[in-house]
Amino acid sequence: MTTASAPPPPPSPDVLELYKLAVEMADRVSARRGTANAFFLSVQTTLVAVVGFGAPWLAPSAWWTVGAVTAAGLTLSTAWWLQLRSYRDLNAAKFEVINELEDRLPVKVFTAEWNRLTQNPPPVGRRRYAELGISERFVPWVFAAIHLLVLLGTMLK
Image (cartoon, rainbow, N blue to C red):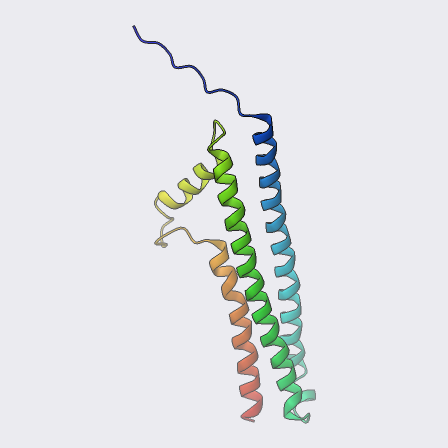
């Protein structure tokens, strides 16, 4: 004769509320990161467009004019990258807390989702799951390279 195991006890209401709050805060950090990315992308694109469309206008200008725009672009690229790294660290800490809280819940939603993403075979043409943060942190350096190439092109004229 077999006996069915008893269902796990319901989670503490306090733990459930903390879990909801932690998930909401992680979502807000991601939303703020998206807003920051939109800001930096807009400013960087504007700088590149000003130099690109203003090339005839900038040609007779002093070399330091393009140098100043390049310095601004490089500064923005660095600030953007540092901010993305900070958001990554903040979200990593938040998900560690979420995972610890999940240990006290009957279902581990985020742990299961992450396991599916990282343990299942990746789509054809990829070796592994590509985290958004990795490609996202590459974009500021692309803009830094564009700014340096514009400066180099201006100086070699």
